[in-house]
Length: 351
Image (cartoon, rainbow, N blue to C red; front, side, top):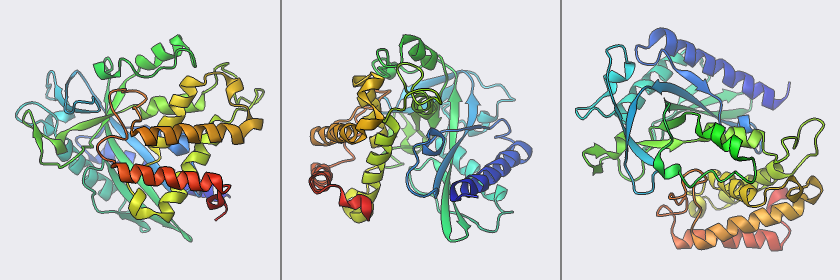
């Protein structure tokens, strides 16, 4: 059995145990459902299979969203009505908003209890602003990290800030976009800045960040304009190989320069690819036999975003993923690292 199948088997056992515990032992998370998202399910995982993330969702009926930031990525969430049987009632504050911090704290306690039967699983200490309960799993000569992410599944129209996003009409088609826009979206208990900062009476630690990771997965698993790209009988493209190379390059550079590049994350690479695909829409723009050229172009796209200090969220164009969290010095440092690797033939790939 391969390391990949070994790891995925262990992860599945742990996740199934957690879900079973929630359904049987928890008053608040009995209706929790697994949402397969992330690089493993998108088949763009790099290096060894030692990091996984799984989202567990609780359905939120009839909610009122209030923007918590000016870019449209963070929200406070209130219930329009609160029937007695709704488990979210227990996490409501005086203003009827759902406390993300209290809900995550309760969720964390149940995850800890659920994995007590696994002697090789350790629960990491909570990180400020992190929406996940992180488990460390010792397996043979490898340590596997598993993020269990709490989320709310919201069945309503996407927020107004998403109006100009998801520009896939000329790439995947208008019908596909309409299908995606008809699906629910997710909110995860993550905040930016200091948790005790308030806006309109809501603390940052009780705000929620919007997520479209389920749509990203569907896009990446069916990414061809002709709808036959990368199928068994179709012509292979290099979109996902390009993403893997970019993610691997960033990962290696972060390993080499952890202090200077700690704030950079692989989601920047995925977003760069999505914008590139929406710009270069034809399958013939991404032929497998021109992988090197396509990767070089994607790398140039990435460097361009870094130089401009501007990379819009693919779904929320008003959110700049390279905004206030990044200073000009760190952006220039990464650009120079990439340029150095490019000019010398990417020696970091052989290390």
